[in-house]
Image (cartoon, rainbow, N blue to C red):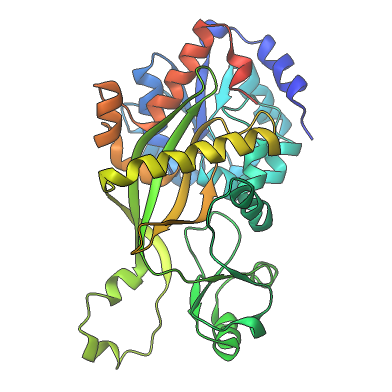
Length: 357
């Protein structure tokens, strides 16, 4: 594993006046690029052939390097160039999916915003659940075997794939039938998680934790627009019965939402509990942006399902700020810009090592 000391040593060779903010050209790249520009940093995107021309046309993008595949960031010659350019990497969902959390922790020598260990915790369902449970948060019941299913369940698969392959099942027979129909590699299909389906309203709050000031912020919130389930609900019930195709849950977009204000204190307690527990589970804990998938029940209780320990795509809604970030900052503050501001503040205080691993 790449040690924190190794990253600190690399950071020690950097010209801090010439830092560049870098990420893969996908997911939240434009938001991150604009955030870097707004905070006075140059930015750099690593793009495949498909994205290089596209991203190069945006005025907020300073530079593009074309690579054969996103995993090419692991090549020594690519990493050496990034280090020579004083790069700080910003991980996002596609970064985790295409490069892999194990590769990030074991092979990536380039300094990265945040604690890279969190990417392993978000990628492993059992570790993720342990994090929730040790933070004393409510989680859905999980079924170890399909023959235990005695209620409506959601079957999920690992990785940041935007809900691809997820399905509902009401019993063991339906589970096996639908699992066969899932269009995913067999090795991924074997790693399913069976969760109780909790009925309620979904929320995805965007938190940001700064270890520089021990401050937890709520930067925004979204819900996911999913295909085809959000299309099916628009069809009248009588016609739905004639449609043989079941619902799927592939994320295709995001919708802004605000939470009932009386629930905000409970939400912030959840965020703080996750931060404090993370400090014990994987020191120094979560740093920077993270997002929790949760459902609010009719009894106004939150049930936590998943956590992402980095910037999420739903933050793209708020490049000019959200209801919450506008109240906090009184200026346009996206999650991408907040990340870059944290880097700028840490540099000014000579504390970059507190937020980089």
